[in-house]
Image (cartoon, rainbow, N blue to C red; front, side, top):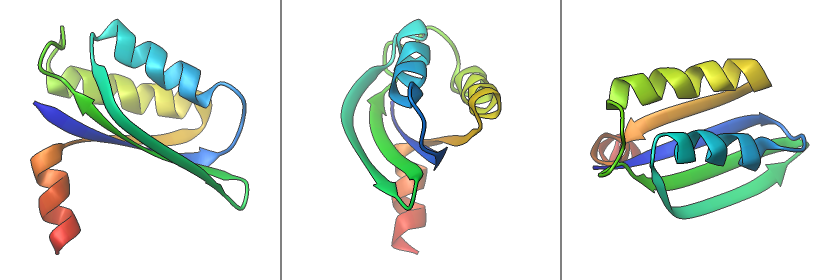
Length: 89
């Protein structure tokens, strides 16, 4: 399964490191990654492959939310199909 991870919050060192560290923990591969800084805010979108993930989607989603709270960012993990449908609306 493919998913989209969005990352939004105040820019600071270590954002990419912490997020990719968690993806590594769950054996999730990054397929594509785009980021920008908009008025001191970090905005990133990752397309990830969860085919070989070692935990359920819901567990990983919960851990992303926890990490976001810990480092002061909004991390949102969505199924790619759902993300695409929402983008078309």
